[in-house]
Image 1 (spheres, chains in turn green, orange):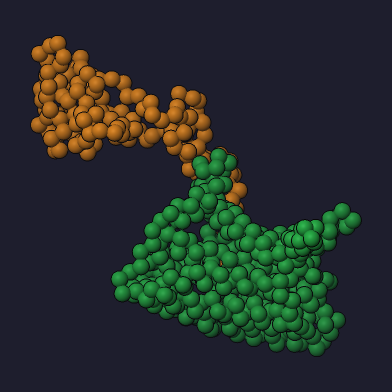
Image 2 (cartoon, helix red, strand yellow):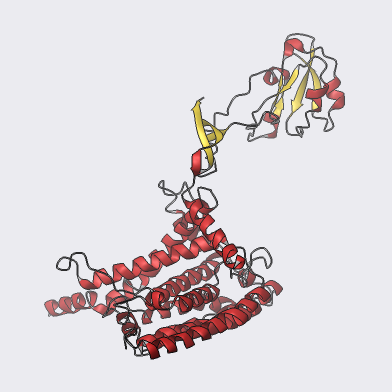
Length: 344
Length: 156
């Protein structure tokens, strides 16, 4: 009897569902990613600005700075403003941190390692990305503060300008691979990565992705110098920590999605096929590609100033959407004249 | 075309900065050399002082008071650095050049009373505070293609 229970527990602990929930892409991955990337961002941004960045906490290059900051945020008090809509005020950051993690369920980390294998995985990821901006709008309204309200309204503009080109630019990928299934999309890139076949689409997707995850130079809803801290102004303590957490999870999801669509996802050579399981090698490759994407996004943060809201709308409506449509037409022509390029 | 160029240039510059020398000095572990006109703690040369009291009259913040030296009747200035704004009027007006400026700015203490420097204390050579670790003396230099940075010029 005891042996059976023990086997059951052991079976559960080594089962795929448990590993996916607690390791990749589950709790451990998300937590470690946030801790490391926040430190890495501060360090790399400092190097771009010829500074040192975090230096003292944790002895080696300030590696424990993020942990110290998180602990500080945990013990701080958060004060809801008078006449705030309490339910929205408390729940918006919680959902803002948890909803982007759902996008990770659609991303394939290896041919078999997906939390939710689906024939419309790309659409699931897009649906989750489309859900995220609603929460800042609720938060901005619930805080009963002008700065947060303006920040929330700006998110609506940014969302409309960024999401349509994001959808349109990925159409080329779908046409080339002939599928919405992310595994099929990755497998279609076994000969060429789609960034080589679709440089224009990749560029449009990349720019609108930055707008969707609200990174500099498109951090218009937060806009530290104009709007205090945008829709996050009234949040303190761990609620503020959760909003930052959500932002970095969006960053992870966005980078993973870009790697999957354009950089060949989990594809990559396994150096020791008998020694390393192929699942591990696939995960290592997609995480490596994600790391490269995150690095590029951070350096972009150091390089460019923030756009005004009208400049973003101009970019989105007058440049990105037409370019995405041109990309679609080019892909159609490519498939018509050279049918062998696609994986379909 | 210039738009594309202007978009790519900052990105290349930002990437190149990652491999350049860090500009910051690790103060207080490294103490960068100060410019020659830096206004630090004022020092008194007692043997030169003629007790004229010009510094006391000229001080806009009433930080200077003439007090008697210990064991003699000679009047010398006592400076309250809690009030001093480092305008250096006293240094420039001193007819005997008894008051001179130094480069030391690390004079913070835990109580206001300790900032009142009687003439004997004012006459001491400025010295790095014991609370801080012994610093490396560094100097800003342009080092080849890796940019400007702080270079050590020997331990103090």
